Image 1 (tube, helix red, strand yellow):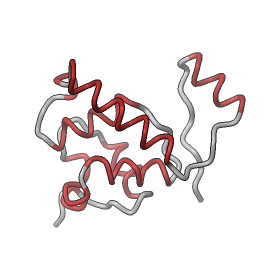
Image 2 (image 1 turned 135 degrees about the vertical axis):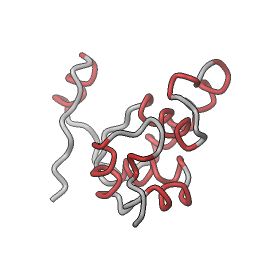
Image 3 (image 1 turned 180 degrees about the vertical axis):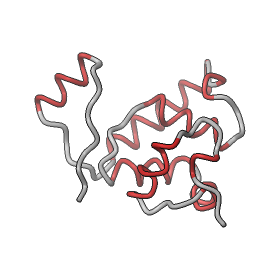
Length: 113
């Protein structure tokens, strides 16, 4: 039996559902894709972009704790994240979603079906 996505360090049970919506159904498939391709799939299937979620994924695939990301490494990951976010095919945020995001209250997951 394949290991769930949540078996990867830093990823919890909610990750299983998010990655499954993106067609990534187990830890091995996630490892094969790598952090950047997998996160791009998440964005393109309606997951709201979140920098900490991205670098926690990167760190987890390296077997590192999420808070191990610092300094120049974090700066470089931020640039990659911003580029992925800008190039995603996800629907743009509405004005209300932008306002809620700016307030830091978070956004509910998109209903994709």
